[in-house]
Amino acid sequence: MLLRNLDPKSGLCYGTRLICRAFGSSVIKVEITSGSHKGQMALIPRVKLSPTASTFPIPFLRKRFSITRSFASTINKAQGQTFSRVGIYLPSDVFSHGQLYVAMSQVGNPSALKFFFNKPLSPGETNYKTANVVYKEVYNRLEGR
Image (spheres, rainbow, N blue to C red):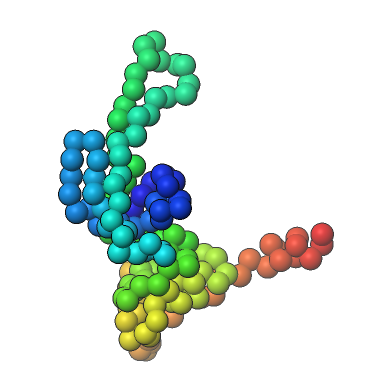
């Protein structure tokens, strides 16, 4: 996953999913796997970074590739993307109104949607369930504006 906007016109934006195809000392050849540039090849350069705070006694410069491994994605990061399969891990109730809907709507085929729960079923229950958490105090504040 790309960690900064390198070239938005070419599809190299923060959060873009990539497949690394070749590694060089100063560039990585990648295939874009999401967005309107899906399937296109691109080069990711090493970026020079230096701290902006002057708390260090000597200046230094660091070079790194602005990518990270990504085996999973948060619901918010997945918004607006379409996946062929989606696994939703729910160790507790979803914490934001509409968040579960966003997670479930990222897959086109409902049979490709799987849920994973980290809690056992209560005695007598046959199905897992999660609460639709709504913070009414937030809505009350918005209505009072």
